[in-house]
Length: 495
Image 1 (tube, rainbow, N blue to C red):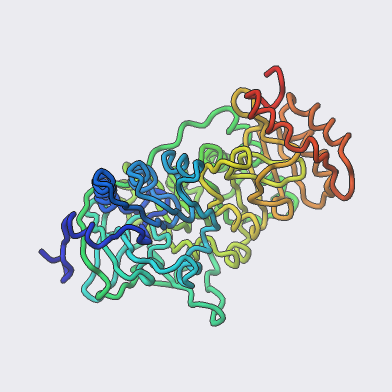
Image 2 (cartoon, rainbow, N blue to C red):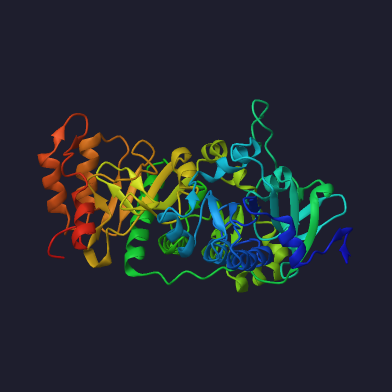
């Protein structure tokens, strides 16, 4: 059987195409538009190979995390030897932290150029989900763009997962533009969040397409939990800060475009912005289009959104497709090299709002590693937006595990975004605007505004007894809270 001239291939033909040690690039940004059928086939094949004493492990690329099929199912089959640039599965995370899988954590906009330049070696096979492929090699992607256009261009062989669950009308949102290699790069002509400069399809050499695998599964998108008191307090602080900036004239009356990370806190902030009568309707220039954004768009508070994926639950995706004539005027999906491009972020004056695991008293932020050693997910796109935004905001609860962990510490053992890029930090305790402050001023403000009252005496004592140059630290105590947690289960004794 053939579809538009390309053969529909069986499980046996899939596993014949992919060998132990191959680099396989999967579509997907989050679970949106992620390959689904082929990872399951490969996981089954890996288990069978291992039962017979044969090796089968792959080097795995994706746009960002890619849902359970890749980051859990393939990992459980011990089928991953190397992973980049981001991951979101507990099984894979544990393997990485046991040094069983090599993991390259990197900025997401860097991925296409890194792969195209050959820094990771050749891409043996690309597995890309689409709603259609034409005989001349036009590939209409599904719920995400991510790095799929790069995979199609760079891979030696291509498998198209034709997903019949996704509507062909998703192509109406796509704006696919490929950046030429340096040094022949012109300015990217995105002057507004909804500007379109490319095509509704990605392109592949038809000779590279080895086959089609049909699929009818929805994306594995789960709803976030309801807002809690802590996230609502953080949202209130952020909203009041933005209103003050607007009153001071540092945010124009029409507002700047917003970017928001993924998670309950970011969703709470967006929901709060939507409810507040003094926040004008606004645009977003972000990585993912989330459930909360769709709600804001329905009420007219969100005028439009640029992203690289539709990370919304299946019910909302159905609603979007059923009302495509409304949403196709308000949503643009781009490759991640464009959605996260530093030049566009700076040009548009984006306000970046991301979440942290912890911060230190000077405003350095760790968003990826527990205790400086164990990966959670990765840096993702937070660095690209933080470094280049008009305003960079990081949010986190002040404590975790009922107070056994403080999110404000003397020194973070892993830095994703440093003090030179982070402008504002927020917990439910308060918001610290660090702009224009020297190190000791920043430390005083973060301790007294953002740290939980349980930890303020310790942090003040640390600062008072530290050795001061331009920055004050006590190198014998700077990781004392982390050592306490590892040894006693609490950063402060008695908790």
